[in-house]
Length: 211
Length: 211
DNA sequence: TTTTATACGGAACGTTGTTCCGTTTATCAA
DNA sequence: TTGATAAACGGAACAACGTTCCGTATAAAA
Image (cartoon, rainbow over all chains, first blue to last red; front, top):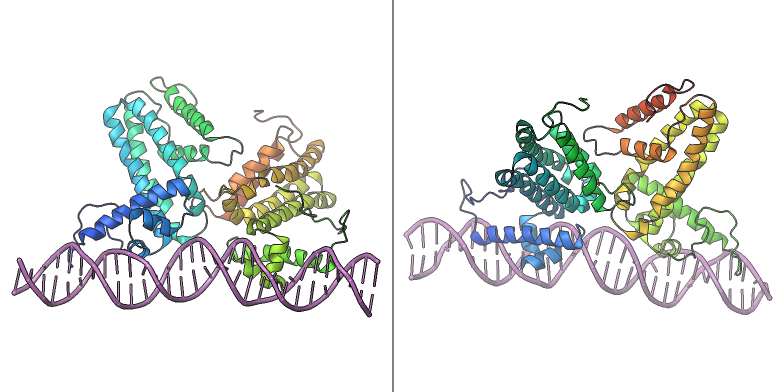
């Protein structure tokens, strides 16, 4: 909506172009609130009361609402934060492992993210316009991350070339979906593992179905 | 949980085996509440306040809670009611049209139901144990209804034989899912129409992929 | 009609998201 | 270093919600 959101992406330069600098305690509290919200959402779910988050951050609710004018803003911030973390993990993992292994490991990292996001997913589908921008953000951050891993693995001959990063992201998200009544989270892991093996299958030789 | 739920399925014999008969006003109010809830949920969504429903039914909140001890009970009742309506529509439509046409028409009826259920779907995935029984109810009511239509259409040679009713139900539900970012409800209709055409395709001749 | 179990209505309670405002404090100019 | 001041703080207060409670009204049985 409005662009007065200061440094939502977690920037570390608290300078406000025309005004004073952002006060140190404000920055500190904002970070504390984000961390507290992350922890509370993880333990008590997204429906946890804001007071619980404010308490955990050691601030009053007034302060909470100063930084996150609505409850949904807090949820959005946590989501974007975790999307960023997941996207950033790609380059870290890529620096540590070979292309094929890196791809597989990041996949599982992504599954963890989706599984954690599960509680939030319901909120996103609630029709609240506050969450409208999230799918786009999700795609813009995660697609390039995965694409880079895919390209590297493809060039190394570890993985077939005919897979679309976006489709892969959504396919995995669906595999983790709870609509498969009866299947637990380990089923999701198995399915995703299968998917990754499928990617590896057509690695160097160009066999297999070329849809 | 407990089985003191009197006549949840909409039975019309208000006799309580060992006690007195159910009071007429109680039955009347219960029906009024169910109808009001259906209307309110359709217009204001499942998050509509209970007072709004009580008002629409011309009843106090105390009466509402006498019939539906928890908010979720009201949602469950509306859901089951609409599942019943959708299931019952099958035989009505079957009596009015030929097997193939009946199948196609009921499909669209089912799509309408799923679309209306959309708001409720989020609540079901919320992990609230109050909704645990719904998927089973959904399947137990709707699968036989679709199976009957499918059998008739198959026997008439209008439709191929190698389709599972349960899978079809879930497939359509997924086609109507909002996760296909950007696609509106008309896209769902198109996709389902495509699916129905696919069923018709392998009708009398047994060609086509036999997965 | 009288009786009585039952259902009714809506005030009242506890918990939520959100707002408000008097108080505190980090920053800047002197 | 030291006021001045804009900014941020804390938590009481508010509105709206789901839910409970209980005095009152009433349909059904005697």
